[in-house]
Image 1 (cartoon, one colour):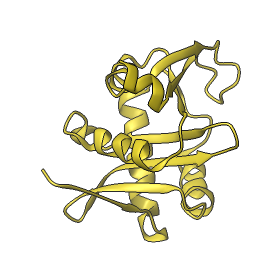
Image 2 (tube, rainbow, N blue to C red; image 1 turned 180 degrees about the vertical axis):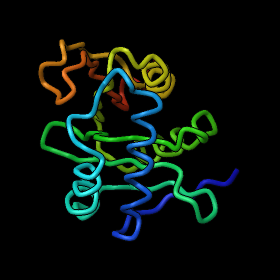
Image 3 (cartoon, rainbow, N blue to C red; image 1 turned 135 degrees about the vertical axis):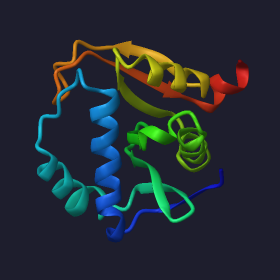
Length: 158
């Protein structure tokens, strides 16, 4: 399978929304969305993609993964990373993570739900370390989450 990456455009909004919603519903059924599918689609169309920090992964003409990132004065963030459920375990997420590690200043941080064991194993396998766990009061879903961080120095010393 050949995966290519590119910056998302407004034409990708429906595909990105399908990936986000489909992956959430398949893998995160314990973390109910705080917004309707229509509200999520509007957010992706009007805010997330126009913000310019969304990368899509393509397999041929099909968009099969997405990653949204941001950077502040203290760290870079992977805000969203979702893959079409049928493509999980086929290297799409790994390509997106490697892209982030190559293009974002360290440290790179992200949150994932504590209950999402697959995601936690994935990030650990890619050199992220657990920094802290929270009770979930700070996220919309109110699900306990885990903060992970990748730093080049920490990765090199392992």
